[in-house]
Image (cartoon, rainbow, N blue to C red):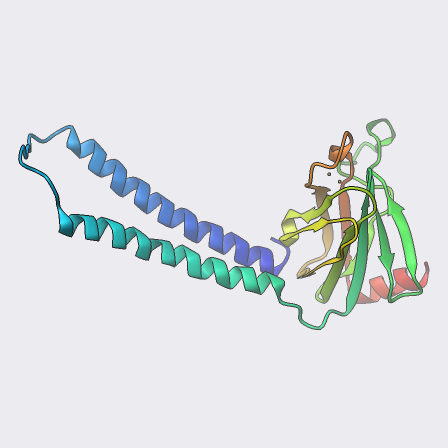
Length: 215
Ligand code: CUA
């Protein structure tokens, strides 16, 4: 993870997986052991007590997933005074970006085709114009689309927002280290859906200010 929210998502994944493993082991053990006993009850008609136990117990176990899940859901929606707002617009098949707070800087961001890729480039993942954003600050993303539904998705930051024509969706993130963060469109948006990647250049704040004032 490169952001606190993605870290929380990973923690939740590990937590849910741990519960899943415990249930699988218990049920697997019980089913396996059925082969090795000779208990028979020909007069079994009902068992109120065991029915109560094996209904309520799983319900309680599910609560241990439901509450952390709800906590995370609301945490992801929280906006804490963003210092930069970036608008990203999905097109068939590229993204365009607007830094509306800074002189209305706007540009398109296309994937670099494989035949034009530098030797150290990432195939189907690198773009001609990267988004530059400051690390260690709250960033708001506004996502929309011009034609069909797209989805602005960056796994390392825990961000995944649909861009829908006629609507403006909001999300936010905080990058806690510098580097390049890659993402892709994740809403099936047409023939070239696979070819509209996203690249964020996470840089220190003073570098960001330098970049934004040279544009
Ligand atoms: Cu845009 Cu898939």
